[in-house]
Amino acid sequence: MIRWSIAIALGLLAAWFAYGRTGTMARSGAWVLGTLRALAVTIVAALLVGAPAGRARPRTPLVAIDGSASWRRAVGDDSTFLRRWRRLISDSIVAPLGDDVALVVVGDSVRDVSARDVGQFTPNDAASRVRPAVDRAASLGRSLVLVTDGEVDDGDALAEAPPGSRVVRLPRASRTDVAVADLAAPSSATASDTVTVSATVVSGAAATPDGVLRFLLDGAEVASRPVPALAPFGSTRLTVPVTLARGARTSLLQAVVQVPTDAEPRNDTLGVAIDVGDRPTAVFVSTAPDLDVREALTVLRGALDVPTRAYLRVAPSVWRVEGSLTPISEAEVKARAAGAGMLIVHGDTAWRPATAVKGATTATARALWVPAPPTQVARAGETARTAEWYMAATPASPLRSALAGLPFDSLPPITLAGPVRGAVPVLSAQLGKRGDAVPAVAIREGGGSRTVLISGSGYAGWSLRAGRSREAFSALWGAIFDWLAAGRGDARAARPVAGIVRAGEPIVWRRGGADSVVSVQVVRRGVEPVSARVADSVRLRFAASSFETASPSLPAGVYEVNTAGGSSVLVVNGAREWVPRAPVVSAGPLARGASGADAPRLADTSWPFVLALLLLCGEWIGRRAAGQR
Image (tube, rainbow, N blue to C red):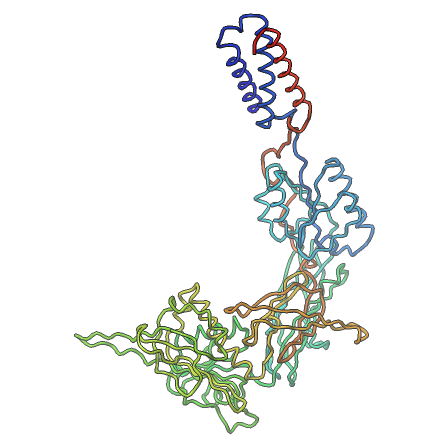
């Protein structure tokens, strides 16, 4: 109405300017000419301002169909179920909206489909993400109609749905369904060790009877626990000790749940790979424990996922196991340090592991870290100031590519114990940002062994500051420990990050060397004949300061990963959509208000142009007949 009001006002104004000001409007002929001018200008103005040609009609909503595989969980791939599901969507939801309905399928992606495609569609996506549908509906100015089973990954995105949107939750039969949702196990362990393994078992929409959870190591059962009856959408966590046999290998650990009348076998098994070594991966010994030790252990265990045993000397001849603070003798600490694949000594670098222990070996990868002495307390009338050393550069070394991006200008100072000599400098520091730079970290390689020499204290200040400083701390110690890891025999250029990997999720990789571009070959086990196995080549690119990257997802299965320096095992479990979970969205309206409306535009038709032209021609003929120009 506003556009038409503007057009009419402009038409009347044009008629008044042409005929009303001179007083000619009083003559009967002038009234006809003024009316023709007003109508012609009104139509032209309406075309220019986009006036509608009729009443507005509500826009057809965008119908988004949840195409995740959870529709088929606990009902199998029965064609009867799929036929009912397709017919219900086509007849009850799509057909009433007319032929111009917009249809999309959401899940692990969003794609357009036609009404005919719905009759042949099979839900098979490995995710249930609905935000792309919300964004699509908002960009089109339409309301959203989401057809789902209620199990979505990002239910909070529906709060931003356009006005008039609603959810249609189709009913599903409640059947007995039990699944292994999580499996917690160490990614690396030492042969003959006993590790703790935990598994989480969940149930579906129906209560379940008692069952049993079995743990398999390389196909052989090593432990079992009874699974109690679970309420609908209930869960329980079961923990067992597992003893690893001797011998270096990569073992496949699986948790398998067995419950009578279980309707879905595709979620009963969950697996993970464990690297089993002949000796401890890393031993960290500190004779002067401080905050630097805690932060370095966090990188060693967390960011790099290296299993580590740490021992602290809290007083002369008094040792404790880091974490539990359990007492331990110095002789036992030396014996365990002698069998380590990687040894880090912090404090008294003259401390040495036992050499006369039967079966003990000398670590081929060592880090010797000399902390700065404590600052002397100032006496009366004196001022004690700690010498502040600032990181200055990364000289040419095997670690330079990993440390080139350190933000030297924003790193907090450290306290240097003295320059490191007799090795290849890796990181240099300046006193007060002035003078010559001296080595603070250096490396030495020879005789089949690798050694890192570290001087100073206060590196933890980088991590505590957070932001770029924390990233620099992780990059420095990650590069040091990764370089040492190659010296202890783990020379793999890249390996999958430990943890549960599921189909439909990206594969996360961790760099094991200095190369930023790594090629790996992935071969799936169980393909017969062996000659028919196809190796997929994956090229991984790591950022200069990052030790992790991701590659596209893989189908469920066990894969052998081959890369420069060695091989590893990747276990890809079934998609998370096969694990039962409680619905997070309910049927009903999502947002108040009316959906958008569309009205036919006057400019989209041809008759207004013809009518305006005829009116102007009629006015011109009338003016000539009246003797006017």
